[in-house]
Length: 43
Image (cartoon, rainbow, N blue to C red):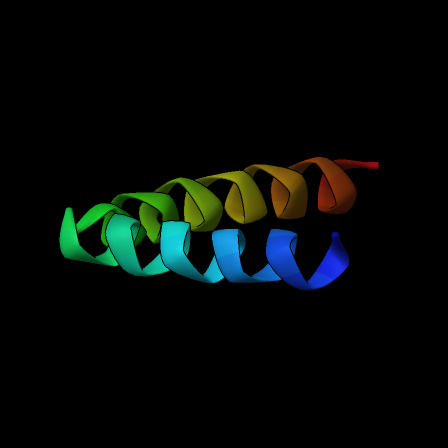
């Protein structure tokens, strides 16, 4: 089962990359990290 789930995850990752979504995910991640950085520095 674990191997099958890994294969599905890899296939999904490849499918997502074909849709050019990783760039959007990276932008969201950068925004979240920036927000967290602001919160930490404000404390």
